[in-house]
Image 1 (cartoon, rainbow, N blue to C red):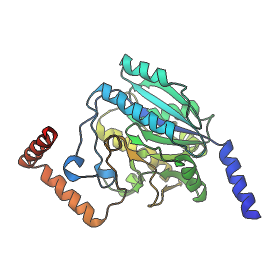
Image 2 (image 1 turned 180 degrees about the horizontal axis):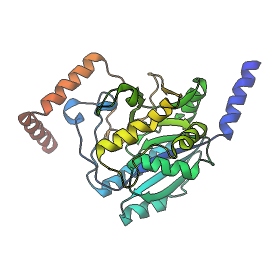
Image 3 (image 1 turned 90 degrees about the vertical axis):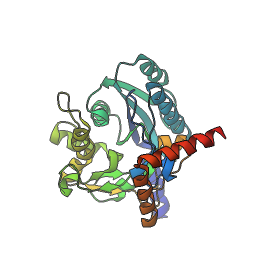
Image 4 (image 1 turned 90 degrees about the horizontal axis):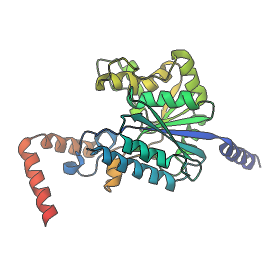
Length: 305
Protein backbone atom coordinates (compact mmCIF):
# COMPACT_ATOMS: atom_id res chain seq x y z
CA UNK A 1 0.00 0.00 0.00
CA UNK A 2 2.81 2.38 0.95
CA UNK A 3 4.71 1.72 -2.30
CA UNK A 4 1.59 2.49 -4.35
CA UNK A 5 1.15 5.76 -2.44
CA UNK A 6 4.84 6.67 -2.87
CA UNK A 7 4.68 5.96 -6.61
CA UNK A 8 1.55 8.10 -6.96
CA UNK A 9 3.26 10.92 -5.04
CA UNK A 10 6.30 10.83 -7.36
CA UNK A 11 4.05 10.97 -10.42
CA UNK A 12 2.10 13.89 -8.93
CA UNK A 13 5.33 15.80 -8.31
CA UNK A 14 6.46 15.23 -11.90
CA UNK A 15 3.16 16.65 -13.16
CA UNK A 16 3.73 19.83 -11.16
CA UNK A 17 7.42 20.23 -12.02
CA UNK A 18 8.61 22.46 -14.84
CA UNK A 19 11.88 21.92 -16.64
CA UNK A 20 13.74 24.23 -19.00
CA UNK A 21 16.03 22.55 -21.50
CA UNK A 22 18.45 25.21 -22.70
CA UNK A 23 20.08 24.77 -26.10
CA UNK A 24 22.59 27.37 -27.21
CA UNK A 25 23.30 28.03 -30.87
CA UNK A 26 25.06 30.48 -33.14
CA UNK A 27 24.94 30.84 -36.91
CA UNK A 28 28.63 30.39 -37.56
CA UNK A 29 30.32 27.63 -39.59
CA UNK A 30 31.67 24.79 -37.43
CA UNK A 31 35.01 23.06 -37.92
CA UNK A 32 34.79 19.98 -40.11
CA UNK A 33 35.69 16.92 -38.06
CA UNK A 34 34.83 13.57 -39.62
CA UNK A 35 37.11 11.07 -37.91
CA UNK A 36 34.38 8.46 -38.14
CA UNK A 37 34.84 8.31 -41.93
CA UNK A 38 37.94 6.17 -41.51
CA UNK A 39 37.33 4.77 -38.05
CA UNK A 40 33.79 3.48 -38.47
CA UNK A 41 31.14 4.31 -35.91
CA UNK A 42 32.60 6.65 -33.25
CA UNK A 43 33.43 4.91 -30.00
CA UNK A 44 32.40 7.30 -27.27
CA UNK A 45 31.92 11.01 -26.76
CA UNK A 46 35.63 11.70 -27.36
CA UNK A 47 35.45 10.98 -31.09
CA UNK A 48 32.14 12.18 -32.51
CA UNK A 49 32.02 13.75 -35.95
CA UNK A 50 30.96 17.24 -36.95
CA UNK A 51 30.48 18.96 -40.29
CA UNK A 52 28.47 22.17 -40.38
CA UNK A 53 30.55 24.29 -42.78
CA UNK A 54 27.98 27.03 -43.48
CA UNK A 55 25.33 29.12 -41.75
CA UNK A 56 22.66 27.29 -43.77
CA UNK A 57 23.90 23.95 -42.45
CA UNK A 58 23.38 25.24 -38.90
CA UNK A 59 19.72 25.89 -39.82
CA UNK A 60 19.50 22.26 -41.01
CA UNK A 61 21.05 21.18 -37.70
CA UNK A 62 18.44 23.10 -35.71
CA UNK A 63 15.61 21.69 -37.82
CA UNK A 64 16.86 18.19 -37.00
CA UNK A 65 17.17 18.95 -33.27
CA UNK A 66 13.70 20.51 -33.06
CA UNK A 67 12.14 17.63 -34.99
CA UNK A 68 13.69 15.14 -32.55
CA UNK A 69 12.37 17.21 -29.63
CA UNK A 70 8.84 17.21 -31.04
CA UNK A 71 8.83 13.42 -31.29
CA UNK A 72 10.10 12.59 -27.80
CA UNK A 73 8.41 12.65 -24.40
CA UNK A 74 10.76 14.10 -21.76
CA UNK A 75 8.68 12.56 -18.96
CA UNK A 76 7.50 15.82 -17.40
CA UNK A 77 6.58 19.37 -18.44
CA UNK A 78 9.60 20.64 -20.36
CA UNK A 79 10.06 23.77 -22.47
CA UNK A 80 12.81 23.94 -25.07
CA UNK A 81 14.72 27.20 -24.61
CA UNK A 82 16.83 28.13 -27.64
CA UNK A 83 19.39 30.85 -26.95
CA UNK A 84 20.87 32.39 -30.09
CA UNK A 85 24.31 33.93 -29.59
CA UNK A 86 23.46 36.44 -32.29
CA UNK A 87 25.85 37.05 -35.18
CA UNK A 88 23.38 39.30 -37.00
CA UNK A 89 22.50 36.79 -39.75
CA UNK A 90 18.91 37.69 -40.52
CA UNK A 91 17.93 34.42 -42.20
CA UNK A 92 18.85 32.53 -39.02
CA UNK A 93 17.03 35.03 -36.81
CA UNK A 94 13.92 34.73 -38.99
CA UNK A 95 14.00 30.93 -38.79
CA UNK A 96 14.20 30.94 -35.00
CA UNK A 97 11.47 33.56 -34.69
CA UNK A 98 9.25 31.36 -36.88
CA UNK A 99 9.60 28.35 -34.55
CA UNK A 100 9.17 30.42 -31.37
CA UNK A 101 6.17 29.24 -29.30
CA UNK A 102 5.91 26.04 -31.32
CA UNK A 103 4.19 23.21 -29.48
CA UNK A 104 5.98 20.18 -28.04
CA UNK A 105 4.53 17.07 -26.38
CA UNK A 106 4.91 18.57 -22.91
CA UNK A 107 5.81 22.18 -23.49
CA UNK A 108 6.67 24.90 -25.96
CA UNK A 109 9.68 26.29 -27.79
CA UNK A 110 10.93 29.63 -26.48
CA UNK A 111 13.55 31.62 -28.40
CA UNK A 112 15.86 34.32 -27.08
CA UNK A 113 18.54 36.33 -28.85
CA UNK A 114 21.59 37.72 -27.06
CA UNK A 115 24.90 39.37 -27.85
CA UNK A 116 27.51 36.85 -28.97
CA UNK A 117 30.09 36.49 -26.19
CA UNK A 118 30.86 33.72 -23.71
CA UNK A 119 29.62 31.12 -26.21
CA UNK A 120 27.33 28.42 -24.82
CA UNK A 121 28.04 29.17 -21.19
CA UNK A 122 27.28 32.84 -21.60
CA UNK A 123 23.98 31.69 -23.09
CA UNK A 124 23.32 29.41 -20.13
CA UNK A 125 23.93 32.24 -17.67
CA UNK A 126 21.69 34.57 -19.70
CA UNK A 127 18.82 32.08 -19.84
CA UNK A 128 19.03 31.03 -16.19
CA UNK A 129 18.99 34.60 -14.92
CA UNK A 130 16.02 35.37 -17.14
CA UNK A 131 13.98 32.26 -16.37
CA UNK A 132 15.03 31.05 -12.91
CA UNK A 133 11.69 31.98 -11.31
CA UNK A 134 9.71 29.95 -13.85
CA UNK A 135 11.31 26.49 -13.65
CA UNK A 136 12.30 23.88 -11.05
CA UNK A 137 15.11 22.24 -13.03
CA UNK A 138 17.38 23.21 -15.91
CA UNK A 139 18.98 20.97 -18.53
CA UNK A 140 21.96 22.35 -20.44
CA UNK A 141 23.16 21.22 -23.85
CA UNK A 142 24.56 22.61 -27.09
CA UNK A 143 22.85 22.46 -30.46
CA UNK A 144 24.99 19.59 -31.79
CA UNK A 145 24.45 17.36 -28.73
CA UNK A 146 20.95 15.92 -28.95
CA UNK A 147 19.20 15.06 -25.68
CA UNK A 148 16.00 13.54 -27.04
CA UNK A 149 15.51 10.11 -25.48
CA UNK A 150 12.07 9.53 -23.97
CA UNK A 151 12.21 10.36 -20.27
CA UNK A 152 15.41 12.42 -20.54
CA UNK A 153 14.09 14.97 -18.01
CA UNK A 154 12.30 12.67 -15.56
CA UNK A 155 15.26 10.22 -15.51
CA UNK A 156 17.67 13.08 -14.72
CA UNK A 157 15.40 14.42 -11.98
CA UNK A 158 15.07 10.95 -10.45
CA UNK A 159 18.87 10.53 -10.32
CA UNK A 160 19.25 14.05 -8.92
CA UNK A 161 16.77 13.47 -6.09
CA UNK A 162 18.11 10.01 -5.21
CA UNK A 163 21.70 11.29 -4.91
CA UNK A 164 22.59 12.83 -1.56
CA UNK A 165 23.58 16.49 -1.85
CA UNK A 166 23.43 16.33 -5.65
CA UNK A 167 24.47 19.40 -7.60
CA UNK A 168 24.55 18.21 -11.22
CA UNK A 169 23.62 15.09 -13.17
CA UNK A 170 26.20 14.71 -15.95
CA UNK A 171 24.52 13.18 -19.01
CA UNK A 172 27.83 12.47 -20.75
CA UNK A 173 29.78 11.61 -17.60
CA UNK A 174 32.09 13.21 -15.04
CA UNK A 175 35.79 13.83 -15.73
CA UNK A 176 38.85 14.94 -13.79
CA UNK A 177 41.33 14.77 -16.64
CA UNK A 178 44.06 17.35 -16.05
CA UNK A 179 44.36 19.75 -19.01
CA UNK A 180 45.56 23.32 -19.64
CA UNK A 181 47.89 23.08 -16.63
CA UNK A 182 44.90 22.84 -14.30
CA UNK A 183 45.06 20.54 -11.30
CA UNK A 184 42.76 17.50 -11.19
CA UNK A 185 40.76 19.24 -8.45
CA UNK A 186 40.18 22.17 -10.81
CA UNK A 187 39.03 19.93 -13.68
CA UNK A 188 36.43 17.79 -11.88
CA UNK A 189 33.42 18.59 -14.02
CA UNK A 190 30.67 17.27 -16.29
CA UNK A 191 31.79 16.55 -19.86
CA UNK A 192 30.69 19.43 -22.04
CA UNK A 193 28.65 20.91 -19.19
CA UNK A 194 25.80 18.73 -20.48
CA UNK A 195 23.24 17.67 -17.90
CA UNK A 196 20.69 18.69 -15.30
CA UNK A 197 20.65 20.75 -12.12
CA UNK A 198 18.03 22.26 -9.86
CA UNK A 199 17.08 25.90 -9.64
CA UNK A 200 17.98 25.75 -5.94
CA UNK A 201 21.58 24.68 -6.63
CA UNK A 202 22.02 27.10 -9.52
CA UNK A 203 20.67 29.97 -7.41
CA UNK A 204 23.29 29.10 -4.79
CA UNK A 205 26.04 29.41 -7.44
CA UNK A 206 24.49 32.62 -8.75
CA UNK A 207 24.43 34.15 -5.26
CA UNK A 208 27.99 33.00 -4.53
CA UNK A 209 29.64 34.14 -7.78
CA UNK A 210 27.22 36.68 -9.27
CA UNK A 211 26.64 34.52 -12.36
CA UNK A 212 26.87 30.99 -13.64
CA UNK A 213 30.50 30.55 -14.78
CA UNK A 214 31.30 31.82 -18.28
CA UNK A 215 33.80 34.06 -20.05
CA UNK A 216 32.44 37.59 -19.78
CA UNK A 217 32.38 40.38 -22.31
CA UNK A 218 35.75 42.06 -22.58
CA UNK A 219 37.63 38.91 -21.58
CA UNK A 220 39.50 36.65 -23.97
CA UNK A 221 37.09 34.60 -26.09
CA UNK A 222 39.79 32.17 -27.21
CA UNK A 223 39.02 28.44 -27.21
CA UNK A 224 41.29 27.65 -24.25
CA UNK A 225 39.67 30.36 -22.12
CA UNK A 226 36.16 29.22 -23.05
CA UNK A 227 36.98 25.65 -22.02
CA UNK A 228 38.79 26.57 -18.79
CA UNK A 229 36.49 29.33 -17.56
CA UNK A 230 33.29 28.15 -19.21
CA UNK A 231 32.93 24.44 -19.93
CA UNK A 232 35.04 23.18 -17.01
CA UNK A 233 34.25 25.93 -14.50
CA UNK A 234 30.50 25.65 -15.17
CA UNK A 235 30.17 22.48 -13.10
CA UNK A 236 33.50 22.58 -11.25
CA UNK A 237 32.14 25.54 -9.27
CA UNK A 238 29.15 23.39 -8.28
CA UNK A 239 31.53 20.65 -7.12
CA UNK A 240 33.70 23.12 -5.17
CA UNK A 241 30.60 24.52 -3.49
CA UNK A 242 30.22 21.12 -1.82
CA UNK A 243 27.70 19.45 -4.12
CA UNK A 244 28.07 16.10 -5.84
CA UNK A 245 28.48 15.66 -9.59
CA UNK A 246 26.98 12.32 -10.63
CA UNK A 247 26.96 10.49 -13.96
CA UNK A 248 23.91 8.75 -15.33
CA UNK A 249 24.30 4.94 -15.08
CA UNK A 250 26.48 3.29 -17.73
CA UNK A 251 23.51 1.42 -19.16
CA UNK A 252 21.56 4.68 -19.65
CA UNK A 253 22.24 6.87 -22.67
CA UNK A 254 20.27 10.11 -22.84
CA UNK A 255 22.15 11.89 -25.61
CA UNK A 256 23.51 11.54 -29.12
CA UNK A 257 25.62 13.65 -31.47
CA UNK A 258 23.64 15.47 -34.11
CA UNK A 259 25.92 15.03 -37.12
CA UNK A 260 26.36 11.32 -36.44
CA UNK A 261 22.61 10.88 -35.92
CA UNK A 262 21.84 12.80 -39.11
CA UNK A 263 24.07 10.34 -40.97
CA UNK A 264 22.84 7.15 -39.32
CA UNK A 265 25.99 6.65 -37.22
CA UNK A 266 25.52 5.24 -33.72
CA UNK A 267 27.76 6.27 -30.84
CA UNK A 268 28.89 3.79 -28.22
CA UNK A 269 29.10 5.47 -24.83
CA UNK A 270 31.76 3.26 -23.25
CA UNK A 271 33.94 1.29 -25.69
CA UNK A 272 35.92 -1.73 -24.55
CA UNK A 273 39.70 -1.37 -24.17
CA UNK A 274 40.27 -3.29 -27.43
CA UNK A 275 37.75 -1.12 -29.31
CA UNK A 276 39.34 2.06 -27.95
CA UNK A 277 42.87 0.94 -28.94
CA UNK A 278 41.69 -0.06 -32.42
CA UNK A 279 39.97 3.29 -32.84
CA UNK A 280 43.04 5.23 -31.66
CA UNK A 281 45.32 3.37 -34.09
CA UNK A 282 43.01 4.28 -36.98
CA UNK A 283 43.00 7.94 -35.97
CA UNK A 284 46.82 7.95 -35.87
CA UNK A 285 46.94 6.33 -39.32
CA UNK A 286 44.52 8.92 -40.68
CA UNK A 287 46.94 11.69 -39.71
CA UNK A 288 49.39 10.34 -42.32
CA UNK A 289 48.90 12.29 -45.55
CA UNK A 290 49.12 9.34 -47.95
CA UNK A 291 46.56 7.37 -45.93
CA UNK A 292 44.11 10.28 -46.08
CA UNK A 293 44.60 10.60 -49.84
CA UNK A 294 44.05 6.89 -50.46
CA UNK A 295 40.97 6.93 -48.23
CA UNK A 296 39.44 9.90 -50.06
CA UNK A 297 40.17 8.35 -53.47
CA UNK A 298 38.45 5.14 -52.40
CA UNK A 299 35.53 7.07 -50.95
CA UNK A 300 35.04 9.07 -54.16
CA UNK A 301 35.33 5.91 -56.27
CA UNK A 302 32.62 4.23 -54.19
CA UNK A 303 30.34 7.26 -54.62
CA UNK A 304 30.71 7.07 -58.42
CA UNK A 305 30.20 3.31 -58.53
